[in-house]
Length: 263
Figure 1 (cartoon, rainbow, N blue to C red):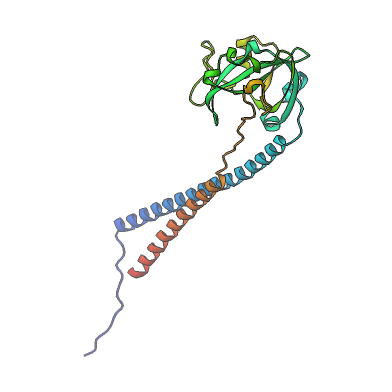
Figure 2 (figure 1 turned 120 degrees about the vertical axis):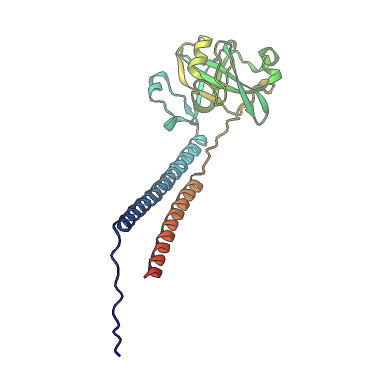
């Protein structure tokens, strides 16, 4: 008796099975594309942080050079339109004039010496223009000018310090209350208008640590700090991109292994 061995015939897939398989492949393709796009977006964010890191390092180097450079005359009125934070912030400057102590403004400050106020006073120059000067810090119990008259010179003075840009409207947490004369930022235009200062410069000067009579106000307390976490952020974004790609490879390999087992 002869036994004939035939090949195992494969039954054609039902239309519903073909449709389900096609639907699964479409979903898998969409899922794969989404993961690839996500990885690309995360990598782009990492590259952006690398670029920001280079920019921040350049900024720190430029500011450090300005802070330690010899002082130059503060920009005159003819150059005010050219003043900007990129080119002028923290530049060491000097100006000669007369302090209008009767027009000083107190701006709330929190410093290494404790809470108190910045004493902002207009410096009137020979040409009639004015530069607002942050003369330094006074504690709360010395906010009244009558308690520190020795520190209010009446004659011509030379101010040396760091050039700063105006701080409009207020601090991050509190807005300036111009009507109530409560100040939380050094808003040059608003303070000048409130005090009736004519022709104010669009910047102010943080006075250096040159001691004032009676020790107040205390100058030279400018904090120069630039948070630089860009390298950490870049590593984080690149790491997330690598994790997404690793997940995609893991899924695709898993599917391939499953297909091999079913054959």
